[in-house]
Length: 173
Image (cartoon, rainbow, N blue to C red):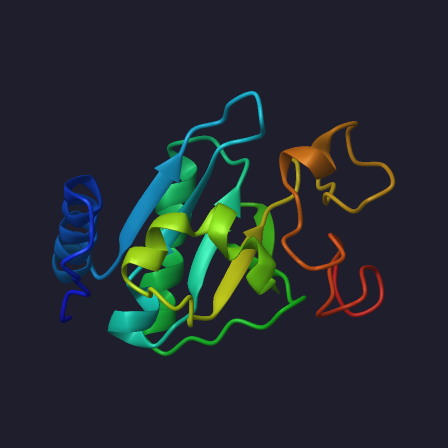
């Protein structure tokens, strides 16, 4: 992968870009993790999946810090091998006994949830998916019986904040 560099990058940004490119070349993608804070739950996202494999970048929000990167690496490996993932379809073979679903990320969420990826894609021209995981009891963020605050802990990154590529309970979970 050819590194995207400009003379105007700050040293810290250039170091991060170099790390992303190195991770992409060594591992097939880079996973960037952001810890939870007073403003929200932790999340992690990929960078280089689109550039290296032609598969959408991905984000997962609210999982334990050790599980998010594992899930993203598995997604990139499978997608890079040709597996296609469809919005609203349940996938039950990433984690034993825990389903997940994919949703398209609205571009308005890119700066907040894919910030470092803009070092690779300065114009923001890349597709992105969100991988959504229910609670251990099987409640989705949009479920009326989801625990209080779960929808804020794992926000849905569409324009409406609800699934938009399918209808919950109709043609999706």
